[in-house]
Every structure is written in C-alpha cells, then in structure tokens.
Image 1 (spheres, one colour):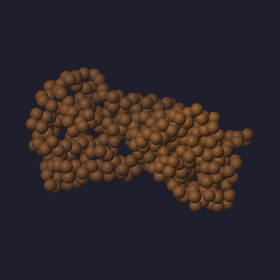
Image 2 (cartoon, helix red, strand yellow):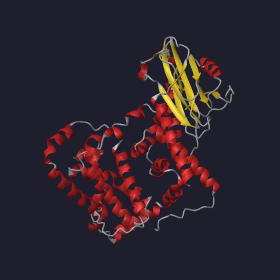
Image 3 (cartoon, helix red, strand yellow):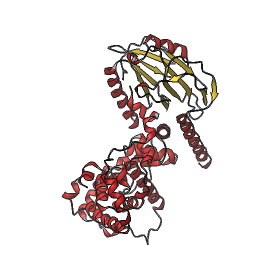
Image 4 (spheres, chains in turn red, purple):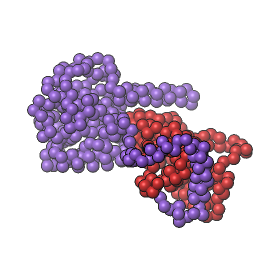
Length: 198
Length: 264
C-alpha cells in the first residue's frame, strides 16, 4: 500500500477502491486537491463545493467496480464523474433541496476550512467567468473545452472523460473555441450574469 | 500528497475518515473478492495504459512528431504548400490546402524523399491494395493519419537531431493550441531520408474535411511508407476508421447546432 500511496492508483487497481480502504485513501490523496479545484471553478458557494466534493468521491466508491481501463485513465474517469455531478447540481440549483442528506452533513466546515475554501473559490473566480461565458455553446463542445481550457486535461483525457475518442474531442475543442471567440467578439461588452455568488 | 497529515483537523482529512469508513463497510460485505484482489495487487501492473486509439490518432500524433519550423527563407512559394529549408539541412513542408500534388511530389523528391501524393474528394479513398505497406521502424499498417480543422499539415525532413528539435517544437505548438494560445491546431510528420530504403516510397493521401459547410475548413492526411512500387489511385467511396470518426463527430455537432438554431 505504501507503493500505491507513493506512485498513485493505477488503472488495474482502481476497481478495488470501493472496497479497500487503503487503496481508496491512496486514490483520495492523489486526487482530492484537483477535485476541489474542479468544483471551485464551477461553484461559488463553499457549502455546495464541500457537498459536491464528498458526492464525487462517494460516486467513485460506488462505481469503481465498473471502471474499465480501456475507456480512459483513472483521472479521466474521475473527471467524468465530477462533470456529471456538478452538471446535475447546476440543474437542481434553485430547487428545493430539503430532504437531501449528504455525507458532508456529518463533516461540518469549521472556520479554518471555510477560509481555505473561500480562498480556493476566490482563486477560481476568473475560471467561473469563463465557464459562464461558455454556457451558450452546445453541451458536447462545451464539455471538452471546459476540461481542456479550465481543468487542463489533455485532449485525449477530456475525450475519455466525456466518452468520445481523442480525434472527436479535438474537433469539438476546435469548434468550441471558434464559436466562443466569435461570440465574444460579437458582444465585447457582455458580461456573464450567471456567476455564482461568492 | 502528504499534506493531509499536516492538516488532520481539516475538512479533507475528516472527509477521508468518513469515506474510509464507507469503503471499509463495503469491503466487509465484499470479502469474497479478496483473493482476486490480492492477485491483482501482486501483479506488477502499474503501467498506466493510454487509450489505444491515442497511439494512432491524430490528436496525439501532433505531440509525437516534428520542429524544423521557424527558419525563414523558403524557396518554394505556393498557396497550397511551402517548402522551407532548415539550418543544418532538411526541410519543413507545410501543406495548407490539398492542391498541386505534383508540385509537392517534386519538392519531396528534391528533399530526397520519393513520394506519391494523391488528393481525393471528401469521403473517397484509394482502392486497396495498391502497394505493400512497410512494417519497418514500427510503421503501423495504416501509417499515420492526421486530421484537424484549420491548421497546416507539417512534414519535417531531416536527421535524428532535427527530429528531436522538431518534436519539441510540435509539443510546444500542441500545448499552445490546447491552452487556447494559438488558433490553429497543427499536425505533423517527420521523416529522415537516411532511413528510406532504395525501393521505398512515401505515400501521402489527403481529402478535405468540410467544416460547417466550408470545404476549406480542414483536411485529413495519411502518410504511409510503401515497400516496392506504388500503383495508381483508383478513387472509391470509403473512409478509414479515423476519418469515419471525424465525420461522425462533425455530423453530430451539425445536428446539435441545427437543434440549437431551431430552439434558439
């Protein structure tokens, strides 16, 4: 397990993280920072960000046994999960969330956590502006652009995260950029209005 | 990675403790698999497997090859392609559009590369087989396929040292494109004339990749090495798997755009 912690969880071991606490811990340590940054780039509220972080890892635990290496690296797989959960959260945002009981409810944020989360969220403000500007792109193109431009995945990783081949991801990335550029040039004064409240 | 040890009171560490408990509970219920798991863990299988296609697809190809780029003083001016001599020998050939195949063959010949260049309409390919693909040097049966909207296809020709420089330059360009710092994706190939046998030919095939109805929006190219003679191209309908994938992506996007147009 020491090796797993030092070298990261490989594709062959990922399927066991849902049942082996040590393997899970190695996986968690490897990815928790990037998951938190992923969430902070999209969500401006620290409580929601904390909930989503917990939900993403819970979903990973629940679905790890279905992971297949040929469909992408563990990182791409985790980003795929994160993307779906954050998108779901955006959809249900504004709805009544009463009755939902997430794991994070039992992991309250103290003042120090809150300050660190706020710092992460503040640092991601620019990314959230860009994210909001991409709202009008077709979902398929936006997804790839987000993962490459905001989350710094490679084109191949982004493709795996959204379930398409690298060459498809490449075409979509190019198209998304072209449209976004055209849109920003057409409306230079427009500012994103959907930004989350910090 | 070890930061959590220093910040045990933090959210991340407390969340980890909770999640470990969840996993442990699932593990107890899943004990039957423990022997299989032990077997897997003892296997030295740490190598991360890249997606298979990534090794052959255009997206990664650009990061693998190419950088004789940047030296000025091209001696061959054409709107279709440019041949740029490089310091220390070798040339960089940039294909901007799929025309003037004979001139490109001539330029390649002058660079020491016997070639057969064929440009086809979209959705067409040459009837196979028309030559014997070389298997030397890890050459894939289908050669290298490159596809991208907008950017030039770059063929570098030079020695091994130049290949390294070319690779670095192309990796830099690919990174810049992925970061959105340059507007045109670039795909590239590199060939060392010394590696060509006397009976080998570089076979370059290309076809347009219509981009939102604009036939000049991009192109697909395939570069293969032939052992022995190369027969003439008899155009037939058909695509390679990579072309088909690209065409499918374009169709899907166009359909989606149409839906958006109607909806919006």
